[in-house]
Length: 338
Image (cartoon, rainbow, N blue to C red; front, side, top):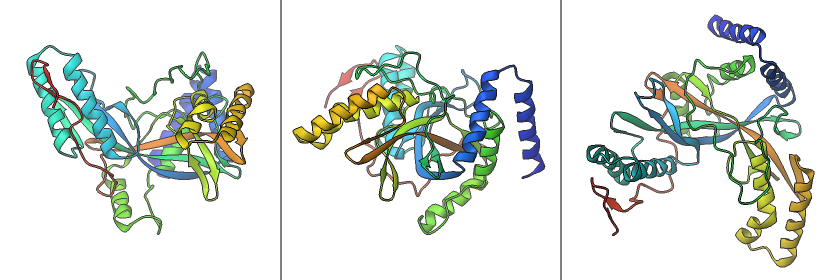
């Protein structure tokens, strides 16, 4: 550990001591306990989203679209839609619409990782997703993790909004000594070993030099299933533990039966299991039909360099390319369906 990092962690510790925030002290105690019970890290792989640098909002890069997509092109598609609907619904200025549509045109034709419109930079950004692991598997939610004010189980209930949106990508901002220690431990992280292709390892090592600073994104929560070779994700990343629990409940209650074409007997077993799980209220582990599911914490880091957040690497895989996703729009906002 360098003197600089020692000083930073000491400063974070001093700040925590002098902060009149008992909740922060409890969160830090939770984090310390978790580091002892779940001392190892399990890498899941890269995730992608969209960041924006808008001079009107300040000099920082901020997250525009959550960093949760499994491929860069999925994030590019999300940006294309964002710019299209901004041009369609959020402006009557022909010049502004023209610039936005020019950026849309680029994303329709090219796997572009950055476009600019009206002085605003939009960038596809890359992070790595990981979880803490202990003797009993992946770390479940902590008592201090945030929950919705109203914890509805209704299938029509809206999911809690992603805390990614609007999140400032500031490598100098760290929430407590444990987070500071985590950033220290991950700063030299790179893909290594026979599990990764040589080009992927080389790019990962290069990113340590070109993007040496780290940002820890807000913690997410997901459903995982225990398999022969470890835990596998079952569904999207959610903002709170309860949102992940409701996702598991909805899967057992109805969605999986439709998706995987359960027969009537299996459909009934899973529907009954869903009600049993719901009755437990805050359960983070559940078994049905010999399958073990768990609600787990999911953490993500994003690298920063001199010009901002890291973009996708050449070794990151896209299963498809750019395409036109929306009708043609002219600068007056008129749509042409082809």
